Image (cartoon, rainbow, N blue to C red; front, side, top):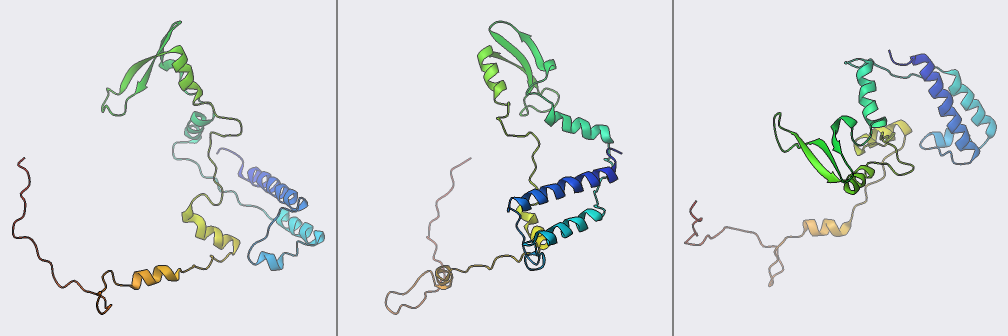
Length: 207
């Protein structure tokens, strides 16, 4: 519907394996879990055989038609990839000293959200340049496999890595088990047997 799935899977397979080989050649490829003992990647022949085996398989790329059609996806992505800080239609007037434009005031409900603001040319340019990304930054966020802590267990299962052992602090346990009040005479823990309220409770101020 959007891209040929089979072509996309083979393209992804080629680029992915190319990156793996580059990491191996630069000695930056790390193995985790069971793969550490069974890979045999210390021998270049074993590594090349493994790469050949991976490239002989058909990789699965999941692609599903969107509910509103491909045009809705392209329209949504284009707002992030090709949209500037302000659209031309929002500019109302421009002269040598001031710029007037419309904006949405989300504190106002209903159909009366659109308002007009007038700024000096210097202030308008300052605010506009705040939306220009520095070198090396991208508009579309990509977190990868470890995008969220909620997916940490899934990542460990996929990599066959056991979670680290839980480190218990004996000092915290002793504090949790100790009573909050200790008798000064016998050093025994004290228990609350009841509460004594004052005979007169102050009234709240009149409304």
